[in-house]
Image 1 (spheres, rainbow, N blue to C red):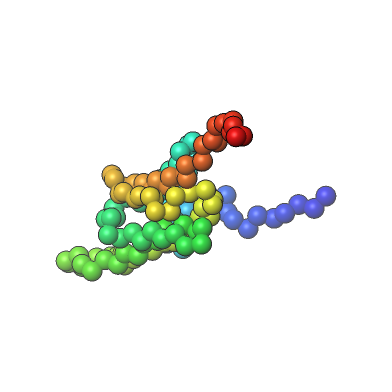
Image 2 (image 1 turned 135 degrees about the vertical axis):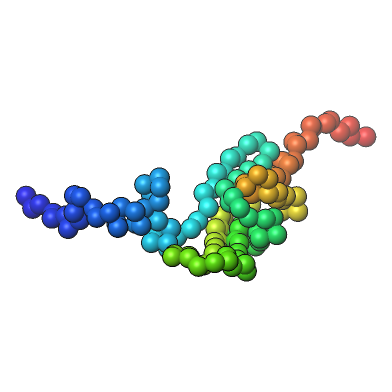
Length: 142
């Protein structure tokens, strides 16, 4: 059996402990280079509901498109203000993301609605109404 040597120290330095992780112990976004909002998708009998956690944004920041059964949600934000005074460490405030989801054929594209409420983007994608089977009838031959 071959053992794998771990190059990481058991006791990380204070620098690594402070700057390489967020306060909650997850990898730093700056370090990983990823910043993708979390998404919940729920299917009901009548629709699909998409909820995207995106706090600190405005409804104007979002672009939602549906093309060829591909729902794309994107945003790009660049901070234009600067803080007064000197600072030891300051990182530019730039955020962007794009998430795409395949939408089934049985949706009503014309009735898709989106709203941004309390830091969550809500998208409702209604399903097409199924044609009700027509009841049969007897036709009298004359």
